[in-house]
Image (tube, rainbow, N blue to C red; front, side, top):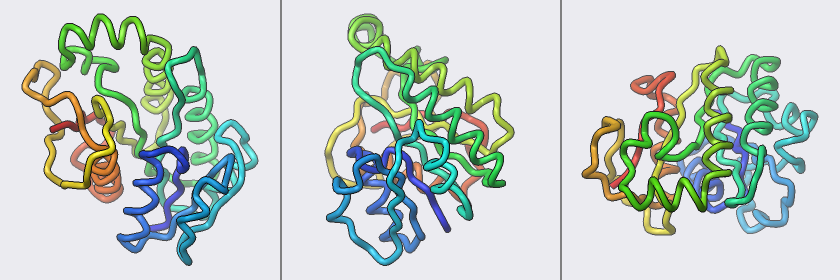
Length: 209
């Protein structure tokens, strides 16, 4: 497929790029600082310099593509980057006629808050990550209001572990048996599978060990 990746210079974004190229996809990476992925030079990779908040760059990156993978984000500080960037991407996809959107969110958003343990729910998320999670909530609302063929992927704590391909997904909100962590490589694996699998179309599957 012809894919566009936003958040391509982040650790999950780089996994998406590497695995997508390994699978034979033609990939456009929208990157504010292209030098961060200079080491990923590949004949099927095109880099568009620009910010996810720049409508012109976003439009250029999406034009002529078949699907979009959104993994842009930031730290725990107060932000609207996910919300604003997602809005711009959704609008650009509508104009370009690109329908498939796989968007990275987080376990603990929406009804998946029930999946979290007490400490994670009331200390980590409610105190330290409250701004990031509020941004994810607004981001998800934008995606859900769209007419796109979307899938929102909700992982818990992300690690730099290996690509195993062995993980759980689509578990119910009351499932407390999940490990509460997953490697970025396995999240990328799951996100790429959603490009052609309609099992979770317009749904918000969690993914974890």
